[in-house]
Image 1: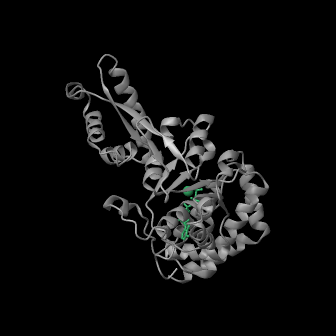
Image 2: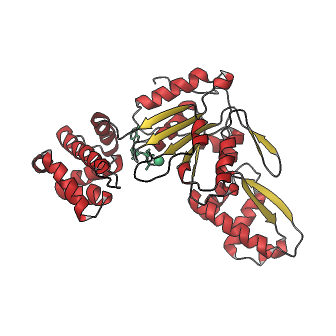
Image 3: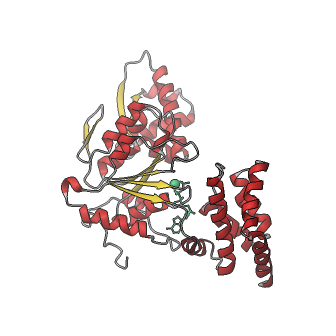
Length: 367
Ligand SMILES: Nc1ncnc2c1ncn2[C@@H]1O[C@H](COP(=O)(O)OP(=O)(O)OP(=O)(O)O)[C@@H](O)[C@H]1O
Ligand SMILES: [Mg+2]
């Protein structure tokens, strides 16, 4: 992708400063993979083809296979602001659509504690461009998930305090609605965990290509640039399968696995700057064997890219490879004696312990 803007979907579109900030900038360590190229090509190809447009994408597969990074990379490729929601099991409709908050009097406001006052003021002063979640994140320096649950508590508190006073209400759209209305790229993480059918229905209708969402205050139409990237772990080890109706509404799917050994090494060099090929190769082999053994024996833990990166980082800092493997990889998968024994047996069967000892001498020799 020599020309950075070849896949921009709306090259003439103007963004405000805040939106500009949300467009991901690829770090030097980002490596473009075939999945990324395929999606860019497909989305661009069909962008102006009406009902054949591809704007809902599913990335399904192993933890740490690069789903989130791919969603962010697409924000950079398409030139669209990136935003995300992390789903949780007891999500309700206000998490999909937004929340109604009573506007309380100045006098009442002064009786509340300082933090609540600060948040409510920020909410009342907002121009409706940011979602309530973003406002809370900024006012209280919280993560998105903390902000969501804090907002719910606050609404409960204010609403129950307000019983007697006649009040005005304001509506604060969710992050989903904001992305939908303004045309951003939205990553929806783990929609499989949502339990409430009504919430899934609301999400379904938000994925309709030519849809609209009815809010208490107005009807918002899907912005032509709105792109949804659903990211989920595959449903092995008991995690739930993605709701069929939701699945049916995506127009392109990538099956994301633990990357190939070559790609693992390439990403690791870019990330850790440790570049001893023979060492990286042995550690990658171990991760691959551990991953396969875990699957074959229904061991729940994951040996993936993240463990690999931290393991390399430890080895690069002189910690013996075999020792570091337990703390960065194996115990992360399981601390059950029997399962550990199975994993060790698999490594021994492939001669990996001997190779790890060689790795230790290679690393030592270099100092
Ligand atoms: N294309 C890439 N180039 C370089 N590094 C990458 C790439 N994709 C992913 N990584 C690195 O691999 C690690 C895991 O990636 P990421 O968080 O995107 O995985 P994920 O599939 O979203 O995981 P989870 O299922 O846990 O959400 C991160 O450290 C990330 O920076
Ligand atoms: Mg992720």
